Length: 136
Image 1: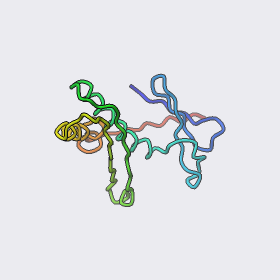
Image 2: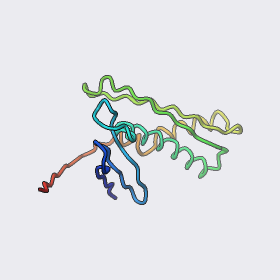
Image 3: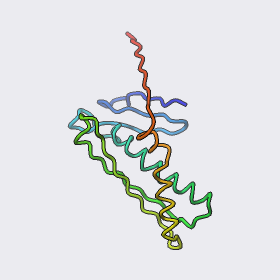
């Protein structure tokens, strides 16, 4: 699978992302030279974690027949030490299910920590190669 990006016509820096049949805009803030027309790459990275945790919990709950009505997530970034090699993300999930037991909530927390993006961010070595083609 690939993700295709192309600068949005007329935008200073914004990139149009095409993922399967979906399209969205990524940009940087005005202070960074963009138009703030969409989430930044860092925002998308952080959002991937929150989305994965919420989706994983919902998938698991449905599969196990647990009475989960909703899952909301919030990811807070602390990038103050990013240049020193530490990027901190704090994920907060709200699991709605009045009939859930404390044991089930504890089980769902463990499931959230095992979401694929969490694993990618914390235990997998990602190898990146970059090629550049020049067009005149």
